[in-house]
Image (cartoon, rainbow, N blue to C red; front, side, top):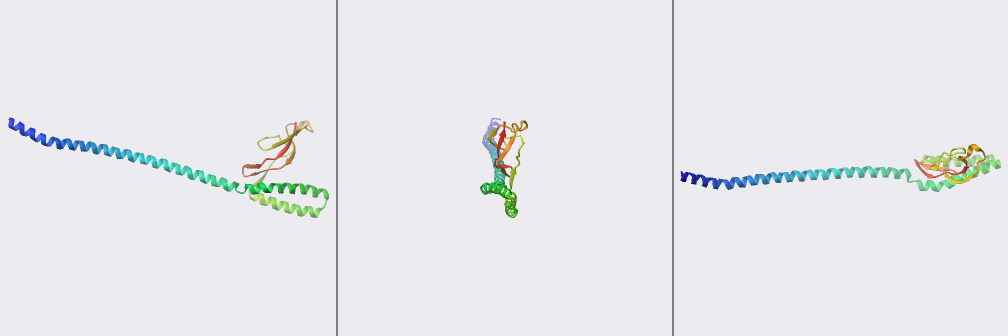
Length: 179
């Protein structure tokens, strides 16, 4: 029996290292597979974050481009505002002179200019005498004693018209307030 036990031990000694090596390899393979799965999960996470950042970039740049198109001609329109003011003053003076032919000609040119600017997005800020003063939509030049009690804190006179381009005010109306 001792020889039989010795033979069994020799067989176990020969087979045991092979089994032990296979067990080590399978545990190494398992950890290697787990490492690969972790790496894959990390790369997927990086990809999703990069994709989300790219989508945000596209959205932001398209919004900026739309805003740029809306206000691209802002400088030109602002440069034209003094010309509109001059036309307003000229129309008042021509009406005083009584020259109907000149008045019609100037009104025609004024309306053509105004309609062109409106087509480009320019709008007049609606402020009139008697409105309650709102600092968000008008600029107070000065305060004077109110001509009547109902004009206290309200607009008494509009010195200069205001204009906006789209939703953005490019020139605030200049007004006089009664106190």
